[in-house]
Image (cartoon, helix red, strand yellow):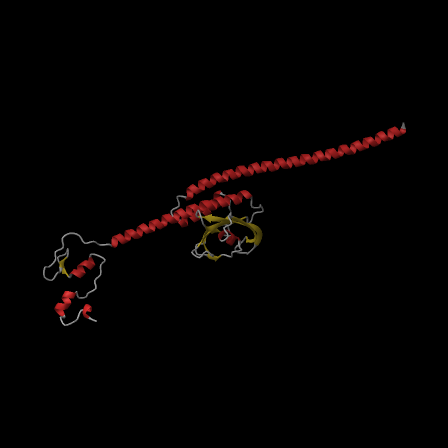
Length: 290
C-alpha cells in the first residue's frame, strides 16, 4: 500500500513537471504569436505608409512638372523630398560631358538647410557607390559610411547612404542620394524603393525640361538671326550713269554701300575680263599665261 502511494506521488510529480513544461511551451508560443502579430501589424502599417508615400510621389511629380527651369526643378525636388517624402538629407548630381565627372545641383547640408551645390564638381571613383551607380549602372547602392553630423564641430557618426540612379530613359545621367544621418532607425526597403522611383521621376522631368530649354534657346537664336537678316524689296532708284542708289532720306550712295546697309552682304573689288581689257589692254589674261 505504501509503495503504491509513493509510486502515485512520483507519477504526480512527473505529471506536474510535464504540465509545467507544457505551460512554458504555451507561454513561449503565446509570446511568439504576439511577436508575429506585432510584426504583421507593423508590416501592414509600413505598407499603408508606403502606399501613402507613393500617392505623395505622384503629387510631387505633378508639381515638379510645372517647374520653370532645370535649376528650379532640382531645387524643388530637394525641397519636396524633405518636406513630403521624409528624406532629411538628399542631394542631386548629374554627369557632365566627361563621364567620370559629376556636377552638383542642390542638396541638404549638415545643418539641415538646403544648399546650392551648382558650382561643385566631383571626379567619380569607379569603385565608390557613385561610381557603381553612374558607371556600372547599378540602379540602387547602399553603403555604410562615416557621416558628418555637424559642419562646425566635424562630428561624425556611422550611418547608411543610399544612391539611386537618375535615368533619361536609356542612360544613367546622374544620381540622387540620401542617408539616415542623425537617426537611429535603419534605412528600410520601402525607403530605398521610394528613392529609386523618385530618381526615375526626376530623371524624366529633367530630360524633358532640358529639351524644352534647348528648344526655347534655339527659337530665340533663330528669331535673333531673322531679326538681323535684311532684305531688299521694291523699286530702287538708281542713276543710269554712275549707278548710285538713292536711299529713303534722299541721299545718293554707291551701290555697294547701299546693299551693305540693307543686307548682310559684303563686297570685294576686282576687274571683270571686259573692264580689264578696256583699262589694261596690254595686260595678258589668266587664260593667256602659259
